[in-house]
Length: 108
Image (tube, rainbow, N blue to C red; front, top):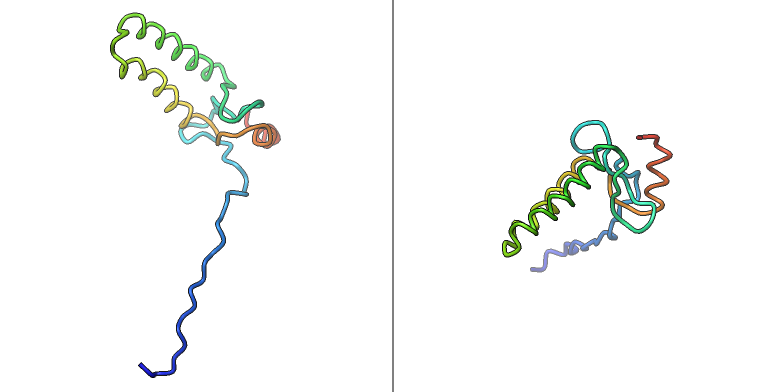
């Protein structure tokens, strides 16, 4: 008390947002299987492997639902698997602008 030292001023930084270049390479491997969507927001398959994973997941989901209709957790497994594959073999998700940036990068 009474030292005369000024109190430190609390400085609050402005919120940051990602404005840098998007990630155009997959987390695992070098070939991109999923890229930003042209319409909407998210990822779309752009390679043969991406389409095989998508079609396989839908087919497996159909078979599991027909075979074990009462097992909800098991029915969700193909979708969760496709989501995991898209996350590790895709770019950063996005919409039209992200897709244009991806295409300019030439990562096909």
